[in-house]
Image 1 (cartoon, rainbow, N blue to C red):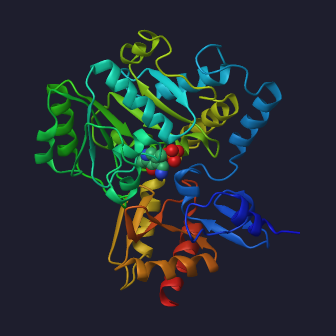
Image 2: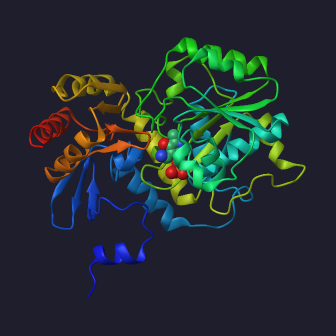
Image 3: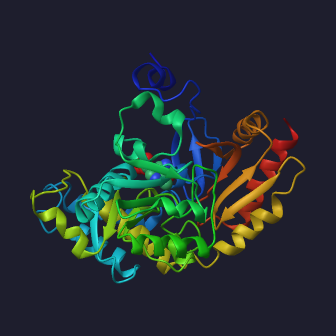
Length: 394
Ligand code: PMP
């Protein structure tokens, strides 16, 4: 009989020559357990997903409760489905009043696609500005926004009219003009290796968008839902987007995404043509119920309060001659080493010792650390001890 590993390699499409190939059978809180009973600390939350930890009890209860009521009953946007309605109401309650209309989808890429279409329709302008080293997803439209040539080069033609500027450089904002329909930008760049810039830049960007009637689309797929210590990352900078995009951590482990705007902007989808954006599974009732429970867990359990201290603890503990720099915003962190060749064996060794980390798509010499927000100080100490041990043993 073939093992799961053999079937994985022969019958599941592969995305690299070197998949991690860990085989987890259960996961709870910050821990995952593999088929041999070995426990790992998940320091990357399944890549930015398990913000409230694996199988958060409120999320599991909400899923079970919804499964007992109904699964899919109708495509998005036709029936009044209680899990979707309650989730939209709760999302809107976390946001400034101009962001009061939520379009639910299934993933980050899909949310980006919807946001781009919405901006194009509302402004009547198709030119888009994105950033170098940005990651917005893998579908054709989202890939067009991606700021890395190597990811795009073999998939052309992509969407026309997209220009890339340097993230955080004010002079580059001059490229936003009256023909620009939207700026799509991560509030904190994730795959670039956690890059963040100060309020002055964001204020200048907001101003330029206002002057040119350009919609500001903030991608908070990785940095939203509490990851940085505020519920939404843009709250750090005292600005507001015209369209906000979320996914990943939003579902507490279930697939869901959304883009949020004002009712006035969103209403363009209802006419000329009718059904301007459609989705069969968008806002699946079980995912919506899980997402609402996730949102409530973050707020009711005051998870954001402790993030600054946990961030500081990581900084305090991750000291080693080989660590060149630690960049972070809340629990979105990048630990920089000299090179990929130095980092890769450290990541592999840490996994052997029971801590799962990773690198970044556009920064292969930095270690990704983005643990579930519920991680305790003891667990942080355990994890950092293992990382330092891994550094010393390679
Ligand atoms: N935007 C950002 C900032 C992301 O980090 C990701 C996923 N890594 C995406 C978009 C795409 O999300 P998905 O993989 O759910 O399509």
